[in-house]
Length: 219
Image (tube, rainbow, N blue to C red; front, side, top):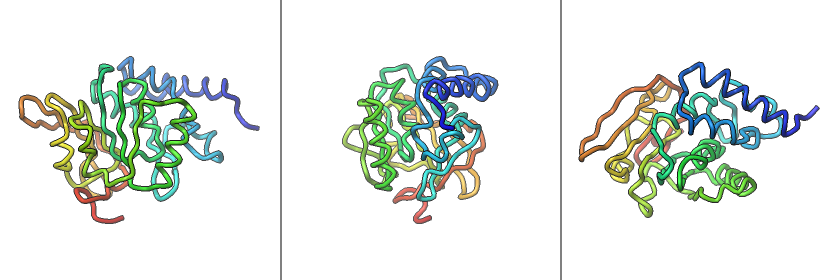
């Protein structure tokens, strides 16, 4: 039996109450966005019943949609106020960009796999998330046309912080990225203020590989 929209809404609210708030996700804007965005629309039909579970899910092409907690953690870490123009590297399913679109003024998201980007764009348009701009490209080079960005979020793990992203980050600005080897990374919050770069580790995570000129060279 398929779930109704009202059923998904109830499960989504339960996700926030049981998975996010107990793990110190406390930012009101982040929690509100997580309650609003229909995560089940960003996965294939066969997985919709699992969309609000506490785990990542496959979306094809060897990629995943991150578990809700990680999406919320990365969003909260940026300390968004609502006026920001934000760059996302790795559109994937589109769910992270959708969450950001509920908080920020404009979201620019770059994806290297055309099939994923086309599907994500369809969902954005169906939900009327019109403040999301998409681009098919190597995300490790950023999106220079619209720089600087108040915040940058990278949804794949790389060996280092790509220099083009640091250059395109506003001052002051914040960047969240998983950095490490191919098996495990530490989720870092990188801040730029008065020309100085500082980094701190938020949590240990496991992400798909960040492929590109300034990431891993291949899968």
